[in-house]
Image (cartoon, rainbow, N blue to C red; front, side, top):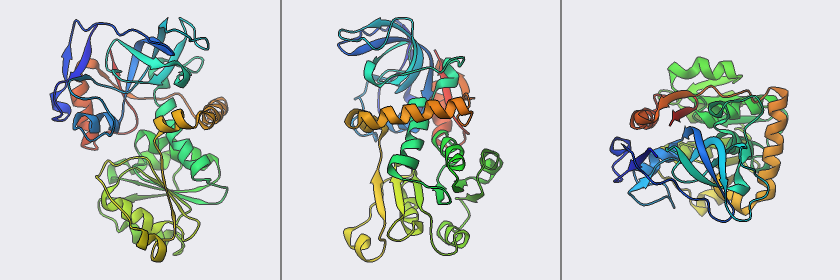
Length: 324
């Protein structure tokens, strides 16, 4: 089969298309999927530079997320059948076939293509977990969504508005109209605005109830500063802008807020009951039309290095997909 291999941890430019790779075999509790479309996420960019914790060592087949048809079952798999169309995660998604854990796949919604289903178990599930079971966002509350034009950000804006929240999004100026069309009440240009001052102005100095923090670096510290004292929650699910820290002294005396870490893969493994609830709610939102079929920007597999480079440069909007 064909696949995109990362031979060194030198960034997206090192990715190369390789032919003649052996098709993987599904082990116990796994399924083999013929990939119809693979999702590109910032985690893929981090992995190419060796900054994604726990990822594979180079050389490796790239990609974490894909949708396609189940073509073989590993031992002990009963809940999934050959011929089912599923979306899930694993290693080696940027290829013609990949192996996924059977317990963590979801069905491609009826009538949707593989490309349209991308993001279900990563982007939308992450956004929903941040908003509800972790952020406990309620009617009339205010949420700050960083990178609101990205795949997780767009999902978060749509769902937060459905749940009755006031939404403040951050994005570069050229992406503001996209975020507004999704329903955001306010959009801030993170490149030029005083983020802390603007958020506090919009909230009458009170701060926001929930922050969806995917940026890191100095933005993380600003996120903590604009969370409402005592009850505000900062849900951290990304570090695109680099590492940041906050001390116990600051949490005690300066920023009395909740800082909560979120990794959807860990949530799936360690709290499968919560993941099942997320999937049930997402299926309900699909039925209501709150979660519409995705419209990713699609690249051919050979153009994977370009797709990841553009994502790293923050030149993309919404979901990105590769077609094997």
